[in-house]
Image (cartoon, rainbow, N blue to C red):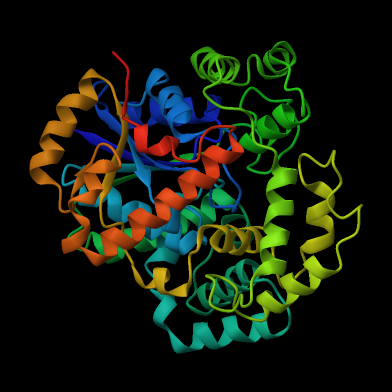
Length: 429
């Protein structure tokens, strides 16, 4: 049985995601290969709640080519690229059935990314000195890291378009996936498939391509706030998302399964939490004086800082992000504050359980094998974790954090904060 792992957020599921699934099966030359995405839950890597809850995005994926969907816990999903990548790869490997992993890249030079990953620069003193030097100038960590990798690669006579390879978000993640695989798959048993991205760039905000970015899709949805008229959203997104994906999202919203999140209200609540907290320093990602900067920012908020109609948070982004502190880092720190994630959670390096979000008939067969081969407990519903907590401290800690993130997420989606306790896997026949 061929099992292809995919790391995704499906925020929301668009044509590019469908292309990735189809292309992965095509490249491994097995139309019946199981596709198993590990997907972010309620919060995404950039630090904001997803546009739809996990159950809706899971159904989108299953209706559009995936076979079984598992969840990446909050602590790894809402994290910098290196932690996001290592957590996702570790969870896929922990299933015990993974044969392949596929992901998108922003460059056609896959061999260059492989060469960079093989440099093992992370533990090199000269690389870290260069990185720290760039950071000390006020440069953001992602940009400093990219420049330090480029310098290190050049000094090792690595040639190619390093600027392009290290500038695209997908390629940065791809590099971290490859580094994670080197750490976790030392015998190189897992086949790697890198697929060049089609259509618009990761952050492209215009809906002018068949393969429109998730950013453009979210902005199109949020442009209809606060009423979120279904007909208008459908008209804007038709052709940019698979029909099953768009239909699932709109029918779920119209039937009351969820409401599209109010990001303005969420950020305002974050600022109130900042002001009411006696200490921010222990919160994850609040290092490097970020805690003081965020507190000063919250104390100085004016009516135009987070306007009522700033549904895409563009005004907030312009006012809070700096060269030193990127918007994603700030939002991850705020999400950590809102969910109670302190720096001790970052010592847990791998997801301690596998949460099954959904499956189809082929995925059901795969899950039976996972149940026998998995290296960590397999969870179908939150209550499954309760009997495991007493014997596994990491599992207890990560599970409780996930449930706090879920409670916050369901509140933003207009549901009871305890709704996650009733959650069961999505089944598509």
